[in-house]
Amino acid sequence: MLVNLQTILKNADEGGYAVPAFNVYNMETVMGVIKAAEETRSPVIMQFYSRLATTGVSDYLAPIILKAAEMASVPVCMHLDHGAGYEAASIALRNGASGIMVDFSALSLDENIEKTAAAVKILSAMGIGVEGEIGHIGSAADGVPTDYTTVEEAKKYVEATGVSALAVAVGTAHGRYKQAPKLAIDRIREIKQKVGTPLVLHGGSGIPDDQIRLAIEAGIRKINFGTDICYSFLDGVFEVDRKIYAVDLFMREPIECVKSFAISKIELLGAKGKA
Ligand code: 13P
Image 1: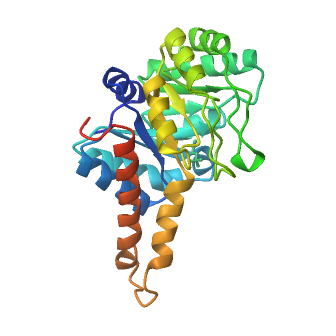
Image 2 (image 1 turned 180 degrees about the vertical axis):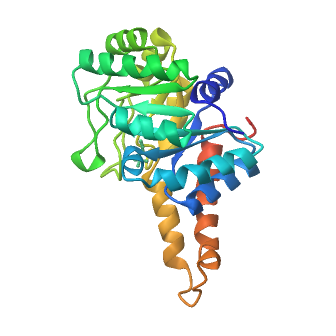
């Protein structure tokens, strides 16, 4: 069933686990993720990047995610990831998203607050939770930022905007890490204690398992996996015998690869059996 962002994260907060948020791109990645969630009885977030909304891809992708959610017996949230502005947010809304991230983290804190608060005002009236970000989480190719989100900024931002989830910069970055990141676990704990709101960890691909467990114990409630779900799918594609040309048969193995990857993360995040 389709559920909104705030509901799926409130349950995770109460249960002390994190919900896996998988970036999906096509029908096959959606199928792999939903099979994993059903098999493990786990709540799941399927999200698409802003680019997919603004280039028209989500007009095709979103109905597939929504159909998967409708048929599923586990809670599914369809979320816009890193919404780059009101245009992407509006498209995702039109597509039926039940969670929206607006990312104004590249702006000053005050501008970020102003723009995020305006989005929350409209979206909360529609029952849709908003994820915001402070302390910009960059690309792993540029190195892991050591400029962490502060407790004061987080408190000010959450109080002024009313976001349902907060993405924090605590030592992660997007893409493949050059070396394993070391997360600022104490900072996560401090922010969680003072702010309360469910916290989100971006750049989930390549974080060592022990760091992920500590981050959840400290208060992270949503962890994003983008790069590694792509690799799980593509590795599957490259393994398939080229003699298989019927695309549905060709895609069986890549779907299974995505499913296995998703199950491993669901188990790591403690979400198994939480549906
Ligand atoms: P990775 O691609 O590093 O897993 O990051 C995904 C992400 O945080 C999407 O917002």
